View 1 (cartoon, rainbow, N blue to C red):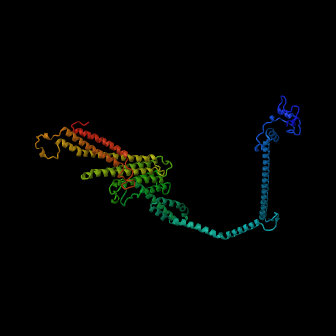
View 2: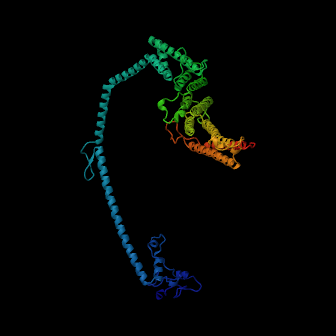
View 3: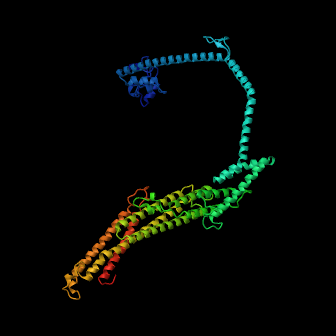
Amino acid sequence: EGESGDGGGDGGDGTGRSDGADPRGSAAEGGAGAPGGVGGGRYRHPSTVPPPRAATKSDLDSPSFDPRSHYVSHVAHSPATALLEANERLALDIRQLDSTMQTLVYENYSKFIDATDAIRSIGTNVGSISGRTVDDAGNPSEKGGSALDRLTISMERVASASARSEGLLRASREAVAEKLRIRRLLTRLDALLSLPSTLRGHIGGGRYLQAVTSHASATEILGRHSAGFESLRSIEAECDGIMRELVSDLKGKIESWSGSAGGGTFALDGDALPGPEGVGEVFECAGTLWTLYPSKTFSPGLDCDKCRGLALDSCGRLLRERLVAPPPEEGEENDDGDGALAGEVPVAFLDGILEAATLYGVTFPSDDVPPGTGGDGPLTEFVTSNFDRFLERVRSILAEGDESDRRGGEEDEDDDDEARDDADFRRVSAALSRLLASTRELASGLALPEVGLGVEVASGLVDRAVELTETLVRRRIASRFRGLRSAVVRDCLGPLVERVVGGGDPEEEKDENDGNDENGAGNELSLAETIQLSSVALSDGLQMADDLIRATLSRGAGPSGRRRGDGGGGGAPVDSAVVKLAVQRSARSFGVWLAGTLEVLAGCEPS
């Protein structure tokens, strides 16, 4: 290789270097070398040639690939083995590329043939549609007919048949339409002719609003056609008379029911108007009058506020008349009698309040008061005032029950006091549990969006019921502890006083003490014996108090162990915290009383 580079230029010697010149520059300035020289005679020393890059396919595929530089670099730096391997790899890549190119050519030719066949089939189809066919070679032929022409002829035939059918059936269709129109007119005429009987039927069934609606729907037809028909004029006059009678009757009823007409209670004789059958009839009557208020012909003269007030007053009087519930029948009373007192709690009164509040919101909807913001003022006053009456009634029922229990205990002194107290406490607990459950159900119903009374008002009702329950529980427990004082005096302190004053055991016979002196000095108890007897009496009294406290707390945990839904108005038991607090207060009062009593018996001043 060195010899083949002797033909270098002036700036290069045999080594390819020049003094002070760039080796690449000296190589570039070299002349045309011998034919055997590397790079066409431009010889460079191997040390000046940059090392070859890795001979990979990516380098060969690079857009900036330089074959000459790649070749010179390999020749200058790679051994013969590496050159042979690179040559073999390049030959293998060339054969693979040739094979791939042939495959692509075959695939492209196949696609071309498929496209040709598709074009030929399209031509055949187009020719068949246009009336021309093509032969196997794709040339047009005049054989066969036009499919479009055949389709056009078929459509014309269908249109002609449809036109003939339309002409034949037009008269029949018009006759059917005319008969349907006449039928509708006859139906309306029949409704008009039977309108008086329809109105009387609705009024007799208590459907006043439906009667007003039926009359309003027929008023326009009667007013438009009654001038030319005598029968329609008579029907219109009869219906107007029925409506005037209805308005007068409803107005008299609502005023009588509400008490604005001067009645004290609902009349029971036949000369005056009877009371309403229920809350629904009251609001049916008030809603009908409010609906007729804008009418110029049948206006009752009662606006919305007046109708609301009359309806609430009527419902209040109706509920107050039914507040005193009848006593339960024999078959309804439980075997143990626990539900007798609970059955007297008039929970139907609360159902009437909820029904009145619901119908009030349905009959007199108000857009001024959003739901859940406290409700309408008159409705809130109606609910709270009637609920107060309900609580007073419950208070009186429980007070009457306690009074009857005390009278029964005084008349039958042989009965077991503890068993009687236990039964009394169970009955009171059942009644109070029913009171709380019914009040919570009422509050849940009043807080619904359909009623819109507001959560604050509903929760206030529950708070008042809980307050009444706590008060009655405290009174009941205080009454039992007052009975405990009588029992302690009778069974503990009384015998103690007799022993201390009488001296000795009162059951001993008198002749055992005949040898004593006149003043009874021989029967006097010693101080130790007196202290011992006092300790026994005190221990017995405290034991009685402890038994009462345990029994009260165990009974306050639940009324007879009943579950909700059982007879006797079972439900949630009285709050145990209320019972515990009442027991603590009564026990403290009892302890103070017992200590003061013992101080008085000992001859000391009570502290």
